[in-house]
Image 1 (cartoon, rainbow, N blue to C red):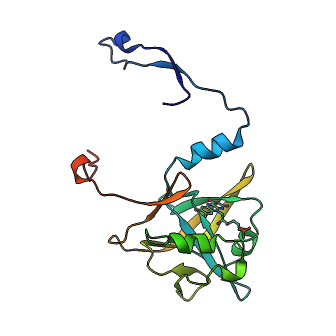
Image 2: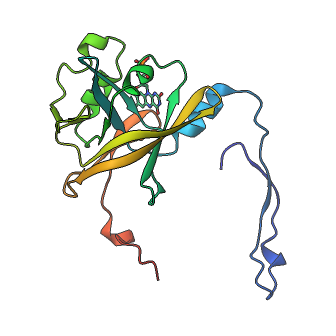
Image 3: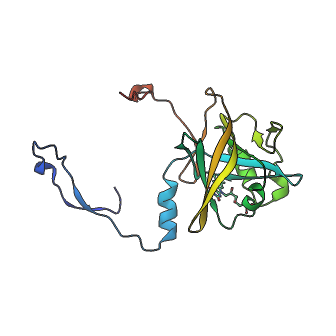
Length: 200
Ligand SMILES: Cc1cc2nc3c(=O)[nH]c(=O)nc-3n(C[C@H](O)[C@H](O)[C@H](O)COP(=O)(O)O)c2cc1C
């Protein structure tokens, strides 16, 4: 691990009492180096979602990678951390429901476009569809959630939005786009390292 000084190796401290060997190391303190933090955050792989809705007669949307599923099953909640400076969120949050599309591996350009600063070109090429409510979705996405805003929690320079899932669709044959180290990637199936995880 780069930047971590190994001080003591304690592998031989393992006794039969069940205590696992623990290596003592030195981890640099975080000292307001936002760039280093941003880089470290970027190494956590995530999916990319488009949040889109029709509000006041306009289609509004943005892209987010700070999106988490499985926040709660009952009620069904997902979450998204949104920059407090976002111009789009204050408009999106007024919609009766928001469409969240998990973008597919071939939709990197669409992600860039929807995240772009030119609001008029955000949906220039994204294939959009709606389901009769305010929620708008990107066609060809492997997962769709229709959501309402459940709660908004201030979190520093972001707001963590808890969204209640009121509609869901999925196509397991489509693969998601993966955002890692500030670039778009694809999942690679590796049957040799095990494909399933059995919870037994
Ligand atoms: C791959 C990617 C991931 C992003 N993730 C987030 C995110 O998690 N939260 C966020 O607020 N903005 C995120 N953005 C930026 C927004 O999509 C959008 O560009 C930004 O909110 C500026 O637009 P706005 O002022 O209209 O909101 C991301 C952009 C890209 C390209």
